[in-house]
Length: 176
Image 1 (tube, one colour):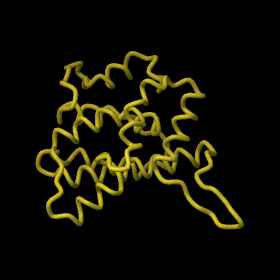
Image 2 (cartoon, one colour):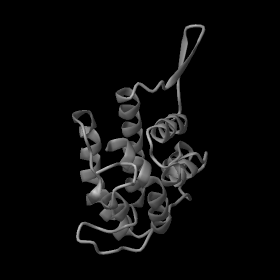
Image 3 (cartoon, one colour):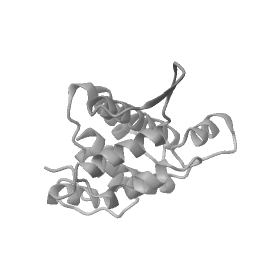
């Protein structure tokens, strides 16, 4: 199967169908679960991502929305780091001997650029870039800090499902 969306199997999963071909409405817990189950994880260096996927599949978004967000963000962080190392994508700047690592959104921009140059349709990755590029998006460090430190900050399971629908194509591409 091609990760670029040229193979019908990938497109079917991308649109929210599970292995039996049953369609799930976009942005629902059922679609999230089907997409996570369909995700192919290639390479021994991604064993932590496979472990996180097993854990996230045990979570119920409506019962554990905070845990779901943290595990999903961890999957992105690890996937991006491994993808960059595997593909020799520079993830830092150097100035006068001082190294500064890129933030996740900078890494993801580099990854998308790499994937597009390899033939992946940028339209497939647009939702992920938009969502993950937000400084205050649901999976941003700022929002995760608010989840932990602000007793009045909460996340709605429906929001999590919609965000997941937008970001999943990039997660899939990084792990294929």
